[in-house]
Image 1 (cartoon, rainbow, N blue to C red):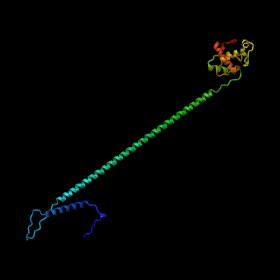
Image 2 (cartoon, rainbow, N blue to C red; image 1 turned 180 degrees about the vertical axis):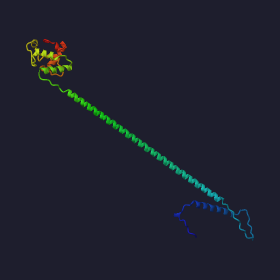
Image 3 (cartoon, helix red, strand yellow; image 1 turned 90 degrees about the vertical axis):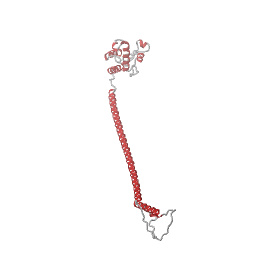
Image 4 (cartoon, rainbow, N blue to C red; image 1 turned 45 degrees about the vertical axis):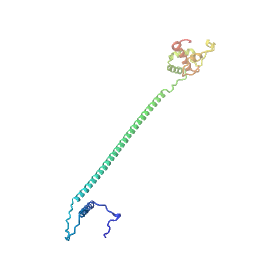
Length: 260
């Protein structure tokens, strides 16, 4: 008995030629069985003559048909495999395209974000530069104003007192001239800021005239000019209050030529 050359663990896959050969053998076997079969209704005759060998007829058409069928199946399987492969390639191409589009969109978004950030930085830098320029301009203005606002100094004498009073009067719109003020000061107190009248009617009434322009306390209090001292004997405060009163009653201290 021939040895079994096919082991369970090492069986080989049938090739196309094996499948065709096996199909052919199966067809021939079926044909032989068909020819040897005896119909059930036939009778058996005994003869002394040697039976002549009957010619066995067979056709190769079935083998051809089987081969064609197998070939068609193989072709169909091959076509299906090609279609599957083509679909895989199409899906892979679509996925690659989608990935590329997503990458391009991401890159575009990142570029737009960078551009927006750059624009924001530029705007911030411009704003800071503008603010710095504005601060510099304000500092320059403040410095200029401070320089301009440096308190003017005046000599501590009659000339200085009159000039300082005129500057205060100018700020408050009080009329008067240097000559008109000096003339009335000389007549009223001879230029003595501590002068006091203890003999006239005001003195008799208990409100003596005081200072450079001999102002009584009620008048000084009523016509006091803001920014000056509340001391009636203060030269500048006395002059500006007297000139403020004279401007209201006479139009200006320049129009006063006697006791007022």
